[in-house]
Image 1 (cartoon, rainbow, N blue to C red):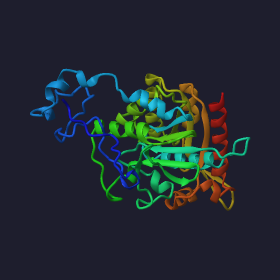
Image 2 (cartoon, helix red, strand yellow; image 1 turned 120 degrees about the horizontal axis):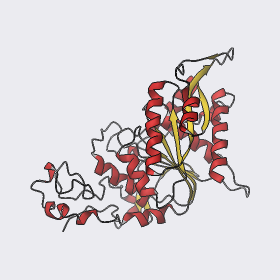
Image 3 (cartoon, rainbow, N blue to C red; image 1 turned 60 degrees about the vertical axis):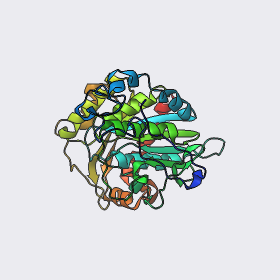
Image 4 (cartoon, rainbow, N blue to C red; image 1 turned 135 degrees about the vertical axis):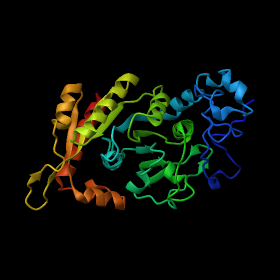
Length: 342
């Protein structure tokens, strides 16, 4: 029998217990480079040689339907809207956009006067930046496990976060994980975090179309994903990867809510003149969206104060309401809300 590590140990004093980093798909007695019990290479990879679990993994018994899927669906049932934020290329401002979107959504109020409830799940396992962008230090972001599950970190009473950045032994600790461990942790974030009732859950992903993206779509599909917002910059080198990202969405059946062109020109705060810092040599996101048949949600111009707000972990939209970038953000968010309510 495979000895699996517990996904969520519940000790006698749960409020004092730190969350475990060990994903459930890696046996406790597995070798260092175990491909994971659910992998096609389980029991067959070179790393499996000599493992006590090799025969049962090779038989295929460990690749049965994932029992966590109905649990994830149950956990996410109180979440109204679930949105993936994607980018083909790194460095296009995807996590910054996710943070600003979260700040803006949590500032909303329902017709009955109650606050909009929002959450951000950071699945950029090797490069978690959401804690910094949301102004939460490692000391402030200590995750605890309770009888209800892992407690997310609240930056506001109605804005919850979860990131591997809250689980690291030190702020600068490197995460050197293969796909199965990443997939296991994403499953835990979805199944074991006590998100509670949310109006919006934003999933900040790493760039590309790899393990984290496939795992998120697989785990969340039964619970229902509203769709994805895809970030790009105007240059062709970024647009090339966004076309691949859109193809990924098509292949996995993920609705594309729209594309956002970030760093789209620069508006001088003094003279209000506009300059194209990253010139759209092939027509930018607008032409690409026409060709790919997706909606361009909007264009966000460069503003150096966005980076400053990100470093300090505050809402750029609140700090600089008169910026052209703020207006662009708010227009995009309004359009996104319209699409979600249809």
